[in-house]
Length: 451
Ligand SMILES: Nc1nc2c(ncn2[C@@H]2O[C@H](COP(=O)(O)OP(=O)(O)OP(=O)(O)O)[C@@H](O)[C@H]2O)c(=O)[nH]1
Ligand SMILES: [Mg+2]
Image 1 (cartoon, protein in one colour):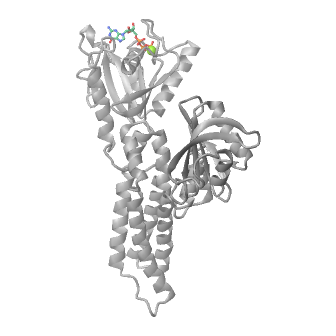
Image 2 (image 1 turned 45 degrees about the vertical axis):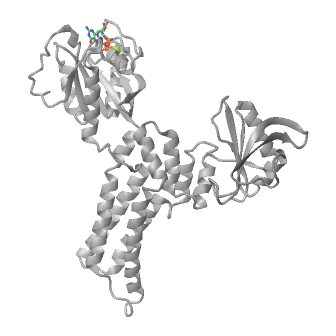
Image 3 (image 1 turned 60 degrees about the vertical axis):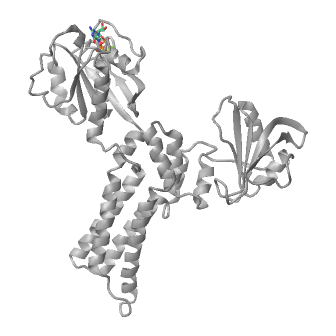
C-alpha cells in the first residue's frame, strides 16, 4: 500500500465522461505533473478545471475536471485524485498511460475498495455491498445492498461477537488465574449462547431472499411438443424471442433470456418438447430440457387443454416436485375444459389457465408465479446475507452448539474456550476482523478494475 495506483473507473467504450483515478501517497504529486492548473495545493473536495498535459512534450491531451480528496477523508482513506475527462475510450487510456509513465502502478481489480477495507474505512460486508450495488438487478436487491453499505448487517454481527468475547474473556481469566477470578456463571453463558444462536438463525433465514433479489431465479418452461411453450415464452418476454410453429418439435435447443417477474430477476428457459423420439438431434434437445429442469428453481409445466398431461410428463412429476412447480393450461381460447380438472395427482399443484396466443390469463399467471416464489421464501427482508456469510454463520452455530453441549455435560471450561474462540473467529470473518489473505483476494478480485 506504499505505492500509488491508477485505473480507469468508467466502463470501456465511448461515453460522455471518463474517470481516471489515482490513490496513494504520491497521488497529488503525480497529478500535479500532468495538471498544472488550479491553486497549489489544490483544495480538498473541490473540483478544479484545466488542461491535462504531458510535461515531457507539452502536448495537451484533454480539458478536464480534477477532483482532489485528501486522505483520510477519501474512499480509500488515502490521498486520491480523480480526473473527469471527456469519455473517449482512447482518450482516457492515454491519460491513464501518462500517469503510469509518471510513476503510478496499474490498479488490480477492486484494489481501491480493498484499500478502503484495509485502511478501516469500511468493513468486509460493506465492501461486498459495493459490489452488490454495482451488480444489482432489482429494486429490493439494491435496497438491501444500500442498507448493508450503511453497516446494518455488521451491527448484529458485531454485537453478538462482542458478547461472546466477553464470555470468552471471563472463562480464560478463570483458566489463567483460578485463584483470583471466579469460574464463569453458566446460566449467564447459556443465555448468551441462546441469544447468539437465535441471531444466527434469524440471519440465516435471510440468505434465500438475498440470493433471489441479488442473483435471481431460473425458470424452465417444459411440456410436450406443440403445447405452446415457445408462444408462452414470447408472451412473457413481450417480444418474439423463440420460433413458434404448428409443427411439433419446433424448439430443438434451449432458448434463454432475462425476464423480470414483478422485480425478481429471472433467467427464463424455453425447452424442447418432451416425447419419445428416434431423431438424434431432438433427443439431444430433450436431454437439455431435463438439464434445464434440474438447474431451475421454478418449473412451469405447460399442457394443452383438453389433452391433459402425457404419460412421459407424468412419469417425471415425482422428481420435478422437488422444485417449485406451476401447471399452465394453455390454449384456453379454444374453449375446452382441461381433462385433468379433477385429477387427484395434480390437484395440489398451483395452476393457471392462459392463452399464450391472445394473452388471456397472463397477468394472473405472473401473479401466481410470484406468489409461488413468495410462499416458499421470505422475500421481504431489509438485510440479507450472502453465501460467504451463510457458511461463516453455520460454522459459528456449530461451534456454539458444542459450547452448549460442553456446559450441559459439565466438562472443563478449557473445552468451552476452544469452541467459543472458533465462534468468535467465524463472526469476525463475516465482517473482516479475522480473515485470511486468500479470502480477501477472492472477494476483491471479483470487482472491476478501477473500483
Ligand atoms: N389457439 C391457440 N394456439 C396456440 C396457443 N399457444 C400456442 N398456440 C399454437 O400452438 C402451436 C405450437 O406452439 P409453440 O409455441 O411452437 O409450441 P411449443 O410447445 O414451443 O412446441 P415445441 O417447440 O415443438 O415443443 C403454434 O401453432 C401456436 O400458434 C394458444 O394459447 N392458443
Ligand atoms: Mg417451442
